Image (cartoon, rainbow, N blue to C red; front, side, top):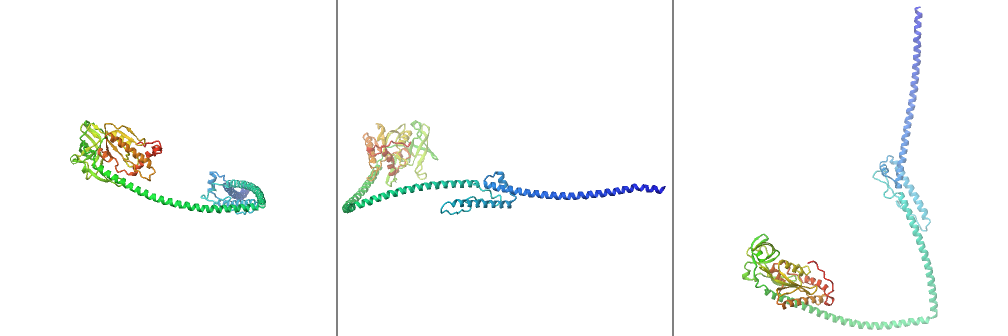
Length: 533
């Protein structure tokens, strides 16, 4: 009983073992099957990935080729330009670029060659880059073609072709018209030649006689002309000799006149230097103090002194020794030696401080070292007296700054402002007095006159001005007015004026008035224009 029970107990174990083995075999088989499937799946995945990469590469290549084609057409946008600068498939894209450029060149040559063959004598000579040129290396520093793309070039070439065709049509039409005109001209010439031939055959003797008569008349005219020319040449030679003689005489007379004028001016200058029109002139006050370029004088409101009045300054002993010690020989702008009084300097009243005290500034000083203005120096103004002023008139040309313009109106205004009463001045633009010479007029200041020479184109006008100045001088002398010169007048009143004005400047100032004179008086009759002086 016990053994049988033992056998019965092992059977389930054996079954369980068999089932376990079978299960293990099944699991192993399944595991093996799954392993094979995984390997196949991995292989397919790798192949799919490779195919995907290949497709992506082809896609990129085609996309980059498309960028090159768009660049050639000139239709790139900003994103396309950025993509073109960062290409990946550079070798393939460069190859596509080269193939495109070659295809364009071949097509262009073939098209141009086909069109050129239609014209006689046309030889194809297409140079590189004439149709479309784009050198590109596939790098960022090799941008697309700018500014013209392939489309632009195509439009340009089409336009040029149309223009060439139009030009050809116009030239062909012009050539045809020219041929027609030439044909008509040939017919006309033929007709004319036939008429000439007919006429020549009809009257050969008449033609020969006409030629003979013409030759005879020519020979006669030649003989008469030669005889007349000899006579005229002799007359011309005689006239030239006389003209040379007159020119020499005129030159001598002009030189003699200039010498006489210079002698007269020198004698007059020496004579005027000896005559002091202010020999009884008295000092109006004296300098009481100097500080820098400011001085104080001993006259003021009690003497009706006002700002702007000027004085010349003389040494303290001038009242006793006279003005002879202040006479200097100087040369004017034209080199002539003249003598005139030279003060130590000039001052201008800037402030009236009291009844007998005023402040002045030094406007001019002959020498700040050897001849400076000092305390005690005397002050003079020939046109002003304590409490009253002299009356003056002006005539002639006054160019006080040497700029070639007459300043007579400005001087009259300035003197009136300073307190010197200007009764009148002679206006050379109208040859009349502006104002009146009265019984109170004490002095007449005579300006300069222009010089007149025989060879001067303005001789007549200058002579008229000189004559008018002489008439003005006579009118003031007839009224008993004393005539003085600028070199005696301006320094004695402390007025700053240029006294060595050249003759050229005076003549230039006179030219302004010559233009305003009537034509019958040597002028041009223009309306005078003032310069605001």
